[in-house]
Image (cartoon, rainbow, N blue to C red):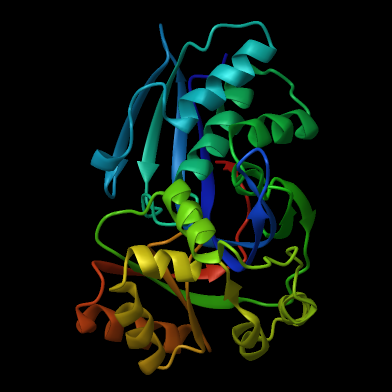
Amino acid sequence: MTESVTVRVPAKVNVQLAVGAARPDGFHDLANVFLAVGLYDEVTATPADTLRITAEGHDVDQIPLDRTNLAARAAELLAARHGIEPRVHLHITKDIPVAGGMAGGSADAAGALLACDALWSTGASRDELLDICAELGSDVPFSLVGGAALGRGRGELLTPLTVGGTFHWVFAVADGGLSTPAVYREFDRLTAGTDVPAPEADPRLLAALESGDATALAAALANDLQPAALSLRPPLSATLAAGTAAGALAALVSGSGPTTAFLAKNAEAARDVAAALLASGTCRQVRVADSPAAGATVL
């Protein structure tokens, strides 16, 4: 058995998040266009007497360090399928914003799954790993795959997408997190009594990704959860306005928020938007990153 395995796994931004009406099981059908971005967590798996989690980095006081952590659940599910005990120490180095709508917890789950697969030499197929990912959560399969993909169902049914260039992003991190279930409940409240259309991917957006055209992508960015996130966290409107005023091509709430995402024309423009956002006092910190990024990768 290897001494330890470290996996790097990216954050994501939803360049389109089309949300259907609530299903009988409480979930929502989605047309979810994922784009992996170059902000990363790292998960290191080391043999241990029992399963334990440690963490370092940004806002780790906000993540659970017990078996409720998705990384721990990933190790348990993989071990159970292969008839072994999940005796592993998982150490998470956080750089993805916590509870920020960028799939940090899902990234850690995918990272832990790939690290434990390598550590234990389980020989799990890609399909088996993706099946476990889907059991763990809607965003976890994409964290494993990376790049760009259209997510159907709850977001777990992935179709890879072609990206024809590099997109430059600025992310503004808000104070505190937003609960994804709470944002969906607010979406249901805001859309109650209305005809919520079936979610479909926007052909203009898919074409903009394929061509690498940032201006065209900016015109097509959409997030059906944004009104709900702004309803629960009204100050985010000021952050969006500050980034747009600073020259961002477009601004939107990332996933369920409260992180906000700003698409910039190029790397220099991204640095300018980041500086203006930080000076605006409307966010706690800013991060600059490019996309697409590779999925979970053993280092």
